[in-house]
Image (cartoon, rainbow over all chains, first blue to last red; front, side, top):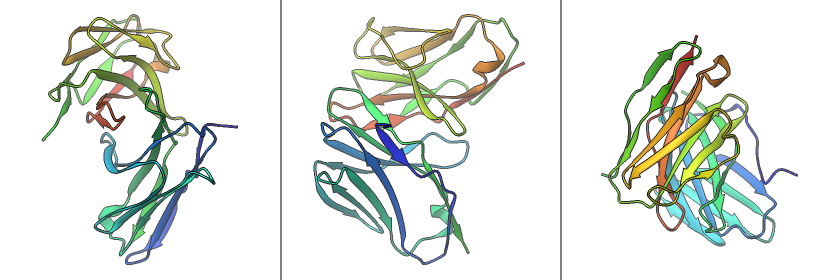
Length: 110
Length: 111
Protein backbone atom coordinates (compact mmCIF):
# COMPACT_ATOMS: atom_id res chain seq x y z
CA UNK A 1 0.00 0.00 0.00
CA UNK A 2 1.35 3.42 -0.95
CA UNK A 3 1.94 5.87 1.89
CA UNK A 4 -0.24 8.54 0.30
CA UNK A 5 -2.93 8.03 -2.33
CA UNK A 6 -4.43 10.85 -4.33
CA UNK A 7 -6.69 10.61 -7.37
CA UNK A 8 -4.87 12.28 -10.30
CA UNK A 9 -8.05 13.50 -11.96
CA UNK A 10 -8.58 15.54 -14.00
CA UNK A 11 -11.54 16.87 -12.11
CA UNK A 12 -13.73 19.30 -14.04
CA UNK A 13 -16.40 21.33 -12.28
CA UNK A 14 -18.48 24.38 -13.26
CA UNK A 15 -17.61 27.78 -11.85
CA UNK A 16 -19.26 28.42 -8.50
CA UNK A 17 -19.43 24.74 -7.50
CA UNK A 18 -17.99 23.31 -4.32
CA UNK A 19 -14.86 21.26 -4.98
CA UNK A 20 -13.77 18.37 -2.80
CA UNK A 21 -10.21 17.03 -3.08
CA UNK A 22 -9.04 14.08 -1.00
CA UNK A 23 -6.07 12.02 0.05
CA UNK A 24 -5.79 8.83 2.03
CA UNK A 25 -2.70 7.69 3.86
CA UNK A 26 -1.43 4.65 5.68
CA UNK A 27 1.10 5.97 8.22
CA UNK A 28 -0.61 6.73 11.55
CA UNK A 29 2.49 8.71 12.66
CA UNK A 30 1.67 11.61 10.34
CA UNK A 31 0.84 14.73 12.35
CA UNK A 32 1.28 17.60 9.91
CA UNK A 33 -0.96 17.87 6.86
CA UNK A 34 -0.60 20.31 4.03
CA UNK A 35 -2.20 21.22 0.74
CA UNK A 36 -0.20 22.80 -2.05
CA UNK A 37 -1.47 24.44 -5.21
CA UNK A 38 0.65 24.28 -8.34
CA UNK A 39 -0.03 26.29 -11.44
CA UNK A 40 1.37 25.11 -14.75
CA UNK A 41 5.15 25.60 -15.03
CA UNK A 42 5.40 26.95 -11.48
CA UNK A 43 6.56 25.49 -8.17
CA UNK A 44 3.96 24.33 -5.62
CA UNK A 45 2.80 26.97 -3.13
CA UNK A 46 1.51 26.23 0.35
CA UNK A 47 -2.24 26.68 0.55
CA UNK A 48 -3.31 25.14 3.84
CA UNK A 49 -1.53 23.66 6.83
CA UNK A 50 -3.14 21.63 9.61
CA UNK A 51 -1.67 20.00 12.66
CA UNK A 52 -3.36 16.79 13.83
CA UNK A 53 -7.12 16.32 13.40
CA UNK A 54 -9.82 18.87 12.81
CA UNK A 55 -10.83 21.59 10.41
CA UNK A 56 -9.15 24.76 9.30
CA UNK A 57 -10.76 27.47 7.24
CA UNK A 58 -9.13 30.23 5.20
CA UNK A 59 -11.42 32.23 2.98
CA UNK A 60 -12.98 29.92 0.41
CA UNK A 61 -10.73 27.01 1.45
CA UNK A 62 -11.36 24.48 4.20
CA UNK A 63 -8.96 21.69 5.15
CA UNK A 64 -10.21 18.68 7.08
CA UNK A 65 -8.20 15.93 8.72
CA UNK A 66 -9.75 12.71 9.98
CA UNK A 67 -6.91 10.77 11.58
CA UNK A 68 -9.15 7.89 12.61
CA UNK A 69 -9.93 7.22 8.94
CA UNK A 70 -6.51 8.39 7.68
CA UNK A 71 -8.27 10.73 5.30
CA UNK A 72 -7.74 14.40 4.52
CA UNK A 73 -9.83 16.74 2.40
CA UNK A 74 -9.62 20.18 0.86
CA UNK A 75 -12.87 21.96 0.05
CA UNK A 76 -13.05 24.98 -2.25
CA UNK A 77 -16.26 27.00 -2.09
CA UNK A 78 -17.50 29.24 -4.88
CA UNK A 79 -14.83 27.86 -7.20
CA UNK A 80 -13.28 30.25 -9.71
CA UNK A 81 -11.46 29.66 -13.01
CA UNK A 82 -8.31 30.93 -11.24
CA UNK A 83 -8.54 27.88 -8.97
CA UNK A 84 -7.66 25.67 -11.95
CA UNK A 85 -4.39 24.06 -10.96
CA UNK A 86 -2.90 20.86 -9.62
CA UNK A 87 -3.45 20.33 -5.91
CA UNK A 88 -0.99 18.22 -3.94
CA UNK A 89 -1.53 16.88 -0.47
CA UNK A 90 1.50 16.42 1.75
CA UNK A 91 2.06 15.05 5.20
CA UNK A 92 4.79 14.59 7.73
CA UNK A 93 5.45 12.97 11.05
CA UNK A 94 7.66 15.87 12.09
CA UNK A 95 10.86 14.01 11.26
CA UNK A 96 11.81 16.22 8.29
CA UNK A 97 10.49 13.64 5.83
CA UNK A 98 7.53 14.98 3.87
CA UNK A 99 5.43 12.63 1.76
CA UNK A 100 3.53 14.10 -1.18
CA UNK A 101 0.54 12.81 -3.08
CA UNK A 102 0.90 12.81 -6.84
CA UNK A 103 -1.54 15.66 -7.23
CA UNK A 104 -5.07 16.13 -8.59
CA UNK A 105 -5.56 18.28 -11.69
CA UNK A 106 -8.56 20.56 -11.27
CA UNK A 107 -10.32 22.45 -14.05
CA UNK A 108 -12.94 25.05 -13.23
CA UNK A 109 -15.16 25.61 -16.25
CA UNK A 110 -16.38 29.20 -16.78
CA UNK B 1 7.87 37.64 1.58
CA UNK B 2 9.88 34.47 2.03
CA UNK B 3 11.63 33.14 -1.00
CA UNK B 4 13.36 30.19 -2.52
CA UNK B 5 15.15 31.26 -5.67
CA UNK B 6 16.35 28.92 -8.38
CA UNK B 7 18.94 30.37 -10.70
CA UNK B 8 17.42 29.21 -14.00
CA UNK B 9 13.85 28.67 -15.19
CA UNK B 10 14.82 26.78 -18.35
CA UNK B 11 17.99 24.93 -19.26
CA UNK B 12 19.01 22.89 -22.27
CA UNK B 13 22.11 20.76 -21.90
CA UNK B 14 23.84 18.08 -23.93
CA UNK B 15 24.24 14.47 -22.91
CA UNK B 16 27.40 14.01 -20.87
CA UNK B 17 27.61 17.62 -19.69
CA UNK B 18 28.05 18.43 -16.01
CA UNK B 19 25.09 20.49 -14.90
CA UNK B 20 24.77 22.73 -11.85
CA UNK B 21 21.39 23.80 -10.51
CA UNK B 22 21.60 26.51 -7.88
CA UNK B 23 19.11 27.34 -5.14
CA UNK B 24 19.12 30.08 -2.52
CA UNK B 25 16.65 30.65 0.34
CA UNK B 26 16.31 33.75 2.48
CA UNK B 27 14.34 32.25 5.37
CA UNK B 28 17.22 30.93 7.50
CA UNK B 29 15.79 27.40 7.18
CA UNK B 30 17.91 24.47 8.26
CA UNK B 31 16.36 21.97 5.87
CA UNK B 32 16.68 22.15 2.11
CA UNK B 33 15.54 19.71 -0.56
CA UNK B 34 15.86 18.86 -4.21
CA UNK B 35 12.93 17.15 -5.95
CA UNK B 36 12.21 16.23 -9.51
CA UNK B 37 8.67 16.21 -10.84
CA UNK B 38 7.54 14.10 -13.78
CA UNK B 39 4.04 13.52 -15.18
CA UNK B 40 2.39 10.55 -13.51
CA UNK B 41 5.22 10.13 -11.02
CA UNK B 42 4.65 13.17 -8.83
CA UNK B 43 7.37 14.70 -6.71
CA UNK B 44 10.37 12.49 -6.00
CA UNK B 45 13.02 13.43 -3.49
CA UNK B 46 16.58 13.39 -4.81
CA UNK B 47 18.58 14.69 -1.86
CA UNK B 48 18.02 16.75 1.23
CA UNK B 49 20.21 18.58 3.69
CA UNK B 50 19.45 19.37 7.31
CA UNK B 51 22.55 21.45 7.97
CA UNK B 52 25.56 23.00 6.29
CA UNK B 53 27.81 20.34 4.78
CA UNK B 54 25.28 17.64 5.69
CA UNK B 55 23.33 15.70 3.08
CA UNK B 56 21.06 12.70 2.94
CA UNK B 57 20.01 10.62 -0.04
CA UNK B 58 16.39 10.74 -0.98
CA UNK B 59 14.47 8.23 -3.04
CA UNK B 60 16.30 8.69 -6.36
CA UNK B 61 19.87 9.94 -5.75
CA UNK B 62 21.54 8.00 -8.57
CA UNK B 63 23.26 10.26 -11.09
CA UNK B 64 23.07 13.29 -8.79
CA UNK B 65 25.16 14.89 -6.10
CA UNK B 66 24.63 17.96 -3.93
CA UNK B 67 26.61 20.63 -2.18
CA UNK B 68 25.72 22.79 0.79
CA UNK B 69 28.60 25.02 1.77
CA UNK B 70 26.42 27.79 3.18
CA UNK B 71 23.11 27.59 5.01
CA UNK B 72 21.22 29.55 2.40
CA UNK B 73 22.53 27.75 -0.67
CA UNK B 74 21.90 24.19 -1.87
CA UNK B 75 23.24 23.05 -5.23
CA UNK B 76 22.25 20.02 -7.28
CA UNK B 77 24.86 18.56 -9.61
CA UNK B 78 24.26 16.21 -12.50
CA UNK B 79 27.68 14.66 -12.97
CA UNK B 80 27.05 13.50 -16.53
CA UNK B 81 23.65 14.53 -17.81
CA UNK B 82 21.52 11.91 -19.53
CA UNK B 83 18.26 12.20 -21.44
CA UNK B 84 16.35 10.44 -18.65
CA UNK B 85 17.23 13.37 -16.41
CA UNK B 86 15.05 15.66 -18.49
CA UNK B 87 12.57 16.89 -15.90
CA UNK B 88 11.29 19.73 -13.77
CA UNK B 89 13.61 20.24 -10.80
CA UNK B 90 12.26 21.88 -7.67
CA UNK B 91 14.28 23.20 -4.77
CA UNK B 92 12.61 23.69 -1.41
CA UNK B 93 13.33 24.61 2.18
CA UNK B 94 11.32 23.91 5.29
CA UNK B 95 10.49 25.23 8.72
CA UNK B 96 10.80 23.05 11.81
CA UNK B 97 7.05 22.37 11.68
CA UNK B 98 7.48 20.68 8.31
CA UNK B 99 5.87 23.29 6.07
CA UNK B 100 7.88 23.46 2.91
CA UNK B 101 8.40 26.37 0.54
CA UNK B 102 9.27 25.66 -3.08
CA UNK B 103 11.16 27.59 -5.68
CA UNK B 104 9.66 28.23 -9.10
CA UNK B 105 11.43 25.25 -10.61
CA UNK B 106 13.98 24.65 -13.34
CA UNK B 107 12.83 22.85 -16.43
CA UNK B 108 15.87 20.93 -17.67
CA UNK B 109 16.03 19.36 -21.09
CA UNK B 110 18.94 17.06 -21.90
CA UNK B 111 19.46 16.48 -25.62
